[in-house]
View 1: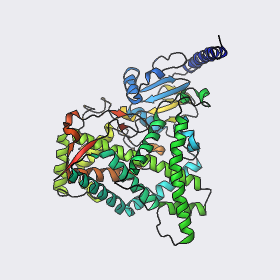
View 2: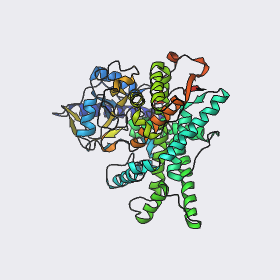
View 3: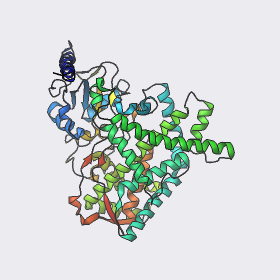
View 4: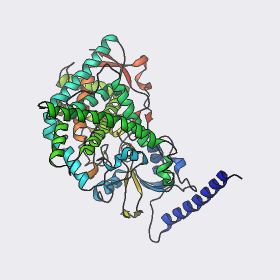
Length: 498
């Protein structure tokens, strides 16, 4: 037997006994009761139960083991929450205890976890960055002041679709929405478009962001077996380093360009970058150059991908369900007038359109597990113990499809919200696509303005036909798992002039 075989034999023998010891310790501490869950195998635990769609696998397991469930994934104890009542316990009643992030190894690329407001612990730096986001980007006043930008970007989206309509060619809805979201953010932050509607640059950036979301969300052996960290056996951290590097290089160039402008000419853009640079000059302890770059990375990765995927799912459901589409068109014609674009102030007068967006977010939450959390001390949830260091996943996808809460949960029925006060702002735990508590998505105020305006404009200005004469009921609705939940096959539809 050669040395490699001996080493492997010793490693797996040691790992086997460590796994058994870890399992016995976690399950048998006196007076402590873990949530129920499937019996783990030696070494791998329950990794074999993840599958390619972990949100679906865990939803099925929760039907057997209950709405709070524990699994051993390699060496990591993972607690999965699949009901609104327990999500409320974790995200509201014990929010602080569950506020820390479980950081995947992929986020160690470029040390992103040390600077990102998404992954930083709840402490002074995190509070400073959240305050900057809430005050300078997502406050009501700031969003009101930038309303003209969103209106202009929606006009550009419709103009792009009109050219496709004239040529009789299909629009890739997700890509078009991504480009709109990308240029909206880039104008808000940098006062310039980052991509041209008719170039391939938007596709390249979308593919880059998509790759980041897939790599960050896919199961990684290093996260389950930390001993493998140095060798990165699946290459995820290596690929993330490349992806992050490309985006950071772009932002570095844009910031340098602005700093040069400030030296040589009078700059009156007063955009988000100006505010951040001014804040950094006056108080570098609050935010510095690195944090500005990483804040931009957070905004562009999260803001573009989630908004575009939500619009793509909403349009897919509308096309798959002609009755809902016709109701939305009738409301838009009556309130706005056929063929007109939607302005933000119109949305409050379009209850059925708002119901469509809520229903799309219920069935297709942008982030199926929200962002993973961890507990730094042992916590009690109901009669169960959540051990220190456990990873905690809130399965928003399963909560939105819970048959004990939602009648006929797999059906797209905007009418279910017609007489309902349920909202997506984190107060109603039956519907938490943006999370809840202090870790709620800071971009929620922008998303709930942008998505209805884009969706309503696309529906009101055109009729739509699926590419290749696919009939609505045959539209493919398969999902591609990552941190965000994408359509496995992009929605392509031909806009038809009214």
